[in-house]
Image: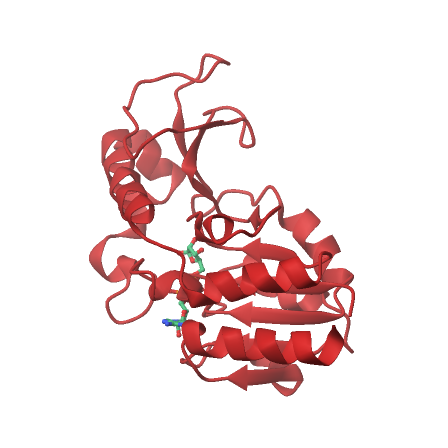
Length: 232
Ligand code: APR
């Protein structure tokens, strides 16, 4: 088994205490996307955006990787060609030992130039101070892909998915595009294992998906153990 591709959403970090977006108690039930996660919001009220992502960053730094993050890192250690693509902005995959993780929607531990979407700088600690500037002179903003903005690494993610022998998808409602369309780039004959206690929008992939309707910390270690046993 050469190319396993892991694709994760907020559900993989739910049991680490980080909120998902569209579950009953999700982030978008508490905040309006138009207020904190669009470019207009950033222009209209940058301090509110900075405060929102400072709060997310504090939560992320206080959270710990869970058994699902650990199992995914173990999968990558066992099969070194495993690629990990996430919609999440947290760094829990990396803190569990995974490497070369592609973050489609940005990273909470970095800030970016206001004029160059991939010019990032690391942020130590949880607090961004609005008004600090990037070396290119522009205002620093959270390194988050806001709704309506381009997803810089999506084409790279599609190329990776197109080479997949197998997909392991964890904890995503498949509501947000283009990220959710990643599954369609995987070869027809690549099996898709999907760990999620809910009912994501499987749509055209339904008959290709093996749905493990369990929480990530239970379902992901089971699938990883099965893959290692079968393919090592
Ligand atoms: N284990 C596994 N999956 C879980 C768990 C859990 N413990 N708890 C919830 N889930 C599942 C839900 O059933 C749902 O399918 O996680 C998914 C969360 O869906 P969303 O909240 O829509 O999160 P996600 O799919 O990652 O959202 C995609 O939307 O707002 C944007 O940029 C944001 O990256 C995010 C994108």
